[in-house]
Length: 318
Image (cartoon, rainbow, N blue to C red; front, side, top):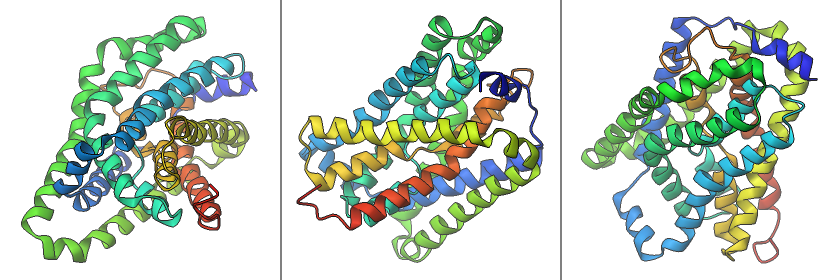
């Protein structure tokens, strides 16, 4: 397994600047669509009843990165440094754009889910670069393989560049979306769902096309990447559920916290990985890119499957 994954790291995927532009625009549209559903009055409840949002926030930005770091340590003899850093980067990203929809299917607290998505996305401008640099730096210091020391460079010198990139990709579309919703509430109601649906379809199409263009690589390595992402996503969902249970969060809210923790914005991770100002093209990034790309597909499958199962279970029992 390790030998195969080592060869994956050196792969240069068939991906051009045009594809990166489409991915950037798609992510911007997704974030704009998320912002259309954000209302300032929703943030008031964070201060009135802060416990649930604080628990969910910590679950996303502390528990998940920590759990991911520990998982990479457990798997360090079976995975490459690039794979480990890919897992850490995904864990450092905010919740995915379909988490609110999945929460509603799972009969969770959609209002809590939306508030968590909004707060997490705004915080990601600072916390995504910080978490990746911190946990990734720890992994490189204590668990990485000697041949991967070159990956230390972007963690040391490009955190500011990552901050700028995350702000452009998340912050600006969020600000524009919230302003649009405030100024044009009637139009917002009409376009919000279509924009969110179309952007998700475009993103999924992008990932599928990227896999088709790299079909041979996909067939050769997918069995290992699938297993790693499955374990990682399972840990993410379990950590969210366990942390919420530890603080005795009500079942309906616990479902939303579980989903928000297990559904990650892997599209952001992909955009950052293809930014050569953050990750120079000379670095062995194949493993990181494959992990982020498969997360983009798998967390939708796992999230919808979990939501379907939870929808059949009465809230009083789980």
